[in-house]
Length: 274
Image (cartoon, rainbow, N blue to C red):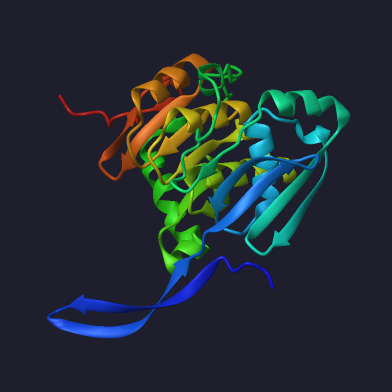
């Protein structure tokens, strides 16, 4: 039987001096193992949906393999979870061993189980500057548009989203998960499968921004990362170093631009009479 991505759970609701009994749909968490050539690399708690995107995106953003080095991906259901079996071409095996992780991440931490400081602060490529800019007034609608496209969140709540937004088209792709890192990996995998150029738009997230999310966007070669919450100081430093425009606290009142602000344009004010 396939693992459900949500479940209906009975609960008591206390409101307006009354207690009512009923049910609410909640998102599911499933243990998902990522195994390469028969050896488990990591185990994450994830929403069991878009798992092919998850396996592909995780492989790319963690620097384990390029898409051309992945021969096949199989999702194998077990009594306790799902084993994503990823089979790599011979040339990628050494890279996978070097990047070996053994983690169990119930809190959604993107760095759980990494075995050395060198791996945590790994080098990432510098992202090329895109041939486009965005208007500051367009950033809030880009973030606000995520909610309408979050199918699972509308049904059950408690889900992060990572979306890809293009200045001329709006949100063109979105993935959801209980983990913010998982949602971003799924988006990266989906963009790769659809052959969407990451340089053509911005990644938009519903979470705070930590250094590992910036690392993943650099590996994707996405030039802009937008979020509703604040970044860490280290995330800002890496975004500046890797050529990514980092925009946070994006809402109707405005936004904060932390790095490479030349890609954000303020609309010209109308001429004022003297």
